[in-house]
Image (cartoon, helix red, strand yellow):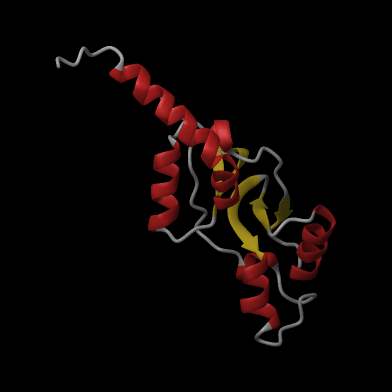
Length: 145
């Protein structure tokens, strides 16, 4: 059996418009208790902003978050994964691109976000399913003794 991203992703999505200021984005992140927001331009996902972006690209450089737009510091291009991609495919993309989270998108529609936290939270469940599937497939074979 194949385990897909949509089975393990976080389905709650928080977004911010690309013209919002970093201060506005920070307030949303605080209110929603999240460390990232997907950035939209005309309703389409174009980037992502994280607490790390805010610290490294604004605060540490002494910039005023009320004068910096999200579009200026967002991580782009937005690397995404399809909802039907396998967990292995998603992890491979994340490792290759050094990502902690990846939006789950198809045809410009955001379905969720798959994060390393999702992977950790569901790892035991994923591992158990893989072992059960392996045992099922092995039970089809007769091993001569």
